[in-house]
Length: 236
Image: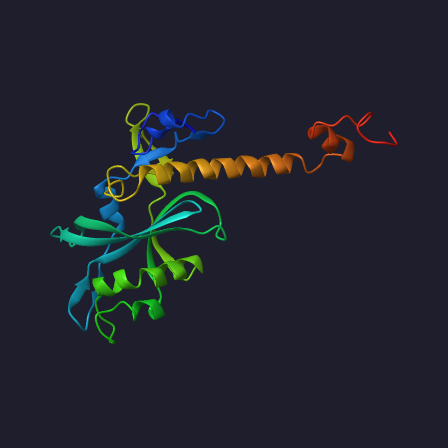
C-alpha cells in the first residue's frame, strides 16, 4: 500500500517493507490527534448524590473490520474542570466482518444502563470499577458488535485555522485522525493497523470492480475471463 500524505503516522514505515503500488491510501485529509485534542473529547460523569465524578471514558477505534476498545482515565484537570491529562490502556482488539466497513473511526462512546450496572463498583448507580471493566471486556465488545452503545463524542473531524487573504481566517475541516501523539500508538501493533487499512482499500477496490462489471453482456463477461466467444464455445 502506498500512502500519500505530507504528514506521517506510526505505521507508515510498513509501506516500504510491503511495497504494493496497486493500493493507494490518499491520506492528505489527515490531522494529528494530540493529547490536547483527545482531552477536549474526554469528560467526567457527575454523580450529584455521591458528590463524585467518574474519570473513566471508553474510546473505540475502527479501521475496516478491525476494532480496538480503549479505557481512557482522566488524571488531571485545569481550574475550570477541563481534562488536561489522561492515561489510556487497551481493553480488547477483535475483527467483525458483519459490521459496516469503515476506513477509520475514532469515537468516545457510552454504554447503556444494563452494561453500566455490570461494571459499577456496587449495585447502586455509582462509579465504574476498573477491575470489573477489564474482566467484562468480552461483554463490552459484544455490545459494540450489536451496536448497543452510543457515540458521546466523535474524533473524526478537526477544524484547522489558516490565514487567508489580508486578515481573513480560513477554516479547513480534516477527517482522517493520525494516532501517533495521543497514546494509542504505544498500544496498537503498527502492522495490524497497516494491514487493516490495506484490507479496507482492497475490499473497496473489489467492490468497485464488481459494480463496473454489473452491466456487461454475456459475451463481454466471457471476454473478461479470457475466452474467445468465436472459438471457445460451440454454437458460435
